[in-house]
Length: 197
Length: 197
Image (cartoon, rainbow over all chains, first blue to last red; front, side, top):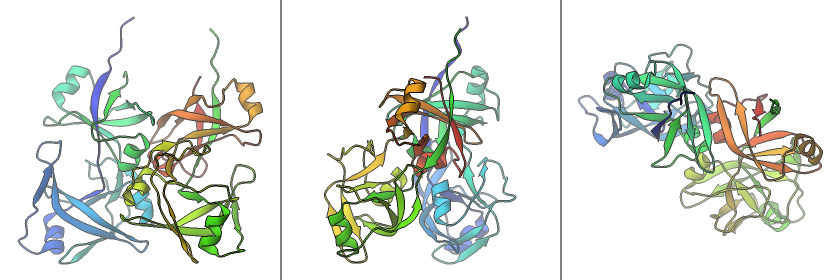
């Protein structure tokens, strides 16, 4: 019987964050302001900026929400379900890398120089695996397929339906939100295993 | 080949809560005050009270934390990891039904009539399965053994290391914390499946 493949992979937790377009950013931070780099993220070119905003709904406030850079051509807010509930929102689980915002709730984003009202744009990100096209080809993993990832420890957990998100530049890693990371006891250097597919 | 057993089970999310002894309760709410019933919980005799407290640390505040009744002979605070982090705490994962509080962090509990300082008592509850002794015997599930529970849906998840917590009065159900419940998309009427053991 042929042994099915398994693969060790680093597991990263994406804390709540927003993506902004330049109009939104300049409204919040002032015309001509630039997004400043705080820390590079694991995916090439992506970074956590020094700038944070406040999210506001009728239900509550969420402070210190970081802007990820670079700026994009749309606005999107990515929260855990726990955080969404603090704001009185019930966003759907959506693929964070597609512009799939129909039917999602909106909110108000507050910055030091102004605020903007989004009619839509709040999602809970679908758990996903970043992988380069080359690695995916080697491993016979198809784009947009779903795999299962096992994390060991006291809170050992198998996450099913982990979306394979492929791009030539990607560094191999699983991205979970904070609920998922906390549920599975994910720390700073957690490794997971992609189960046989 | 003999088919291994599987078992469908209701999945419930235990929100953050505190257990108090009578001295703590009367300090917080006034001498002679009684805990009042808001809602019965699934386990016989257990209830959510109308009374809530505020949890306070140097790191922050957590409001509207419900007291579960009846009063016990000790104080214990059960939080999700997300909530613990909001307070700047890093509690261990412990069995919530054992008095196993050595090495756990403390905090201040604030009520309408006073406050108390706990030197220890904050835990993240270990995911567990409530089961009656009779059902456990029928199913050949040993007390304190660990089982795996699968939840289906967009956020399909298998939680391993679910502790079998047995008592003659128990109603069959899995208890998760809010991080775990949100990570797996658990709603009001979610069923899980105990995987073959």
